[in-house]
Length: 132
Image 1 (tube, rainbow, N blue to C red):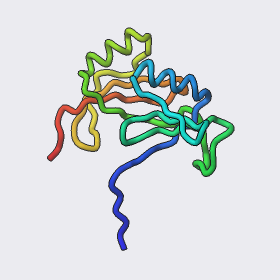
Image 2: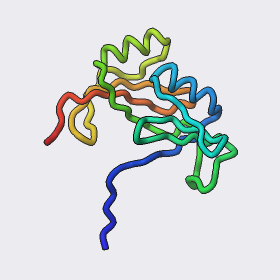
Image 3: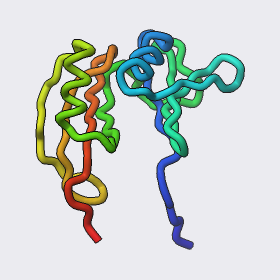
Image 4: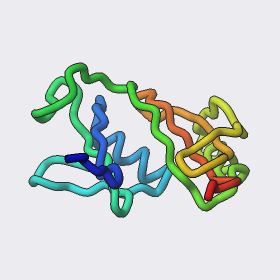
């Protein structure tokens, strides 16, 4: 039997301060948070989510080694990269690199890189060419 994987449902991010993380992702990227299992939080992206674990009190099971600031995440935008850069500048978010030509799962992209409160590397990208 071959297992067939169709897509990623969720990932887990270990963070120092769950509420600060939720505020950042809502205020800067418009990503809402949801509460599940009464007290746990996730960042909600429609059909995917990012579960948030508090550093030092991670929910089980969890990765063998957990630490804030260990993720590189890429989000796809419908905005132009220039609009994203202008928004980040208006919010006083330091930009690490932009514009950068990159390759995504579906083709070529233009990206901007910055950090979240835990110093995770965040990439916002827009496809410039989608492979067929």
